[in-house]
Image (cartoon, rainbow, N blue to C red; front, side, top):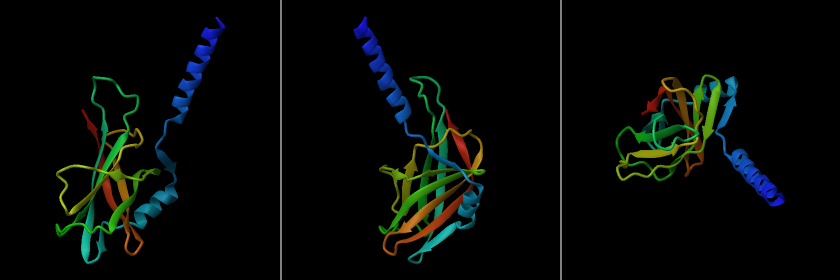
Length: 167
């Protein structure tokens, strides 16, 4: 009887560790910061005489069936594209991503997106740990671009981007 009690206690302890150790998206509610991000960012940037713009794809997987995940987090696929379709400089990186829903801001460090079909004139990153915001709403996206040669950081934005539902 005592052994069963110890096993149950151990299982409950391990279960609570898993429950509370889950990483949550970095969300802040800060109207001033949201306004500063929009105000201090631009639609196109110029680096080494090349003009760049931002492309975004925002979605949540709501596909029914199969093993149902407990979380259906927002995924943000962002591309920095060279307007001249020339190869992206190796000195440029996307260092931070901000998705702004009214005054709520999801902050993320996007990671590499690997695909065989990425053109040389695009730098693509993805963040998969977003909040569970509603779909069919419009948000603003701001990315921090770093010129690794000069250490200059520039904010670029794409306004009114729809969060799509994937079925």
